[in-house]
Length: 396
Ligand SMILES: *Cc1c(COP(=O)(O)O)cnc(C)c1O
Image 1: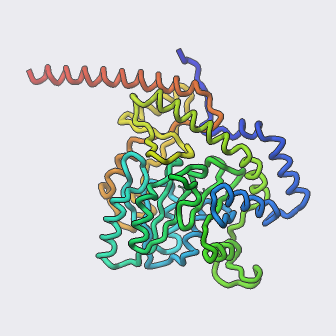
Image 2 (image 1 turned 90 degrees about the vertical axis):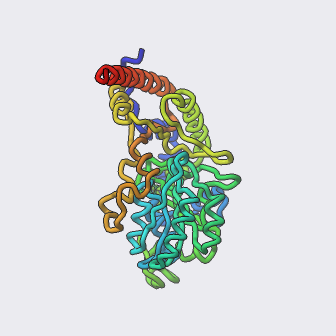
Image 3 (image 1 turned 60 degrees about the horizontal axis):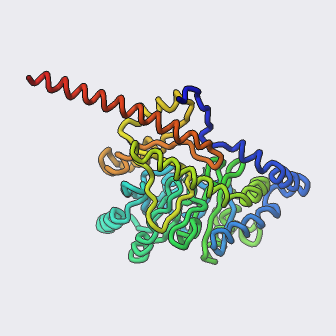
């Protein structure tokens, strides 16, 4: 039925640009005219809109999601001897930010349904680290993977009990909700990314840090510009060059206007994928009271590699997030984790893959994917049936 390759982009930024072209071009032209390319008026305007959107007192635009995480950790003076609890099943930048400051990431296994940090395992990891007494336990860095918030209802009391901060990695979840709170307001500090492929993306690197805490906000503002005091030539602390370009803020301002509509479109596509695929592969689970920003639609199968190959033949691109969990990466070999340490993370990373997901996706992709998976599973069950018969014959 679907013999023609579809040739679908994994993330379609071109259709979005066509929709917003006049607004985006006008916004960029304004920056070119006023000439304040760094820290221009668009930055303050964007920060105002972001803080309103997330219902957080302070939104601080910055140069990337990675720098947003760094700024958050630096606001707590994280450094050598400190431990921060996080997930191994994430983009490398999460754990990298902790390690870059000389601190130690402690990797906690994930929940098998949400793929986010498992609060029960978190509690155990805290107890274990406390007993060993080698590191100073400082904070928890949960990641809202694929757009779904981590279980903050259970993480928050654990953080309080052990006097740990919560730094929300909202790089994939801008627009998601957890109860009556919006992602960006789920941590003591929250960090998001505006990398082009994220739910809200600019045309380069960008990010933002959020907090309700006035003292932390002031420190982050200083850290963003070389630890500036009264001005950038009065340096109060060691900081970063972590500013956002005015042009990126201008682009985000144009895109924010249609962001809720795009979220809705992602939700519809996720619903269609789920209905079509739920009997063929493991589909995402969204706990009651939460909503996902649908950065990715990720599915689980024991036949991942065959499915990826069969989809590629139909022109449907797939990504694997993440084949190598952080604790087994070469970069973190020095921490001494070994295969088997985080069984759920490892099992999920061997079976998961993500289908194309963006607001402008043709619904036909869901039916094509369904028939590809269906045909493949039928073939697989035939093979295993024949193998069973053969094994039976060998015994006789
Ligand atoms: C993308 C991402 C980051 C880093 O964001 P950049 O803007 O690319 O620096 C951090 N954490 C997670 C979970 C991400 O997906």
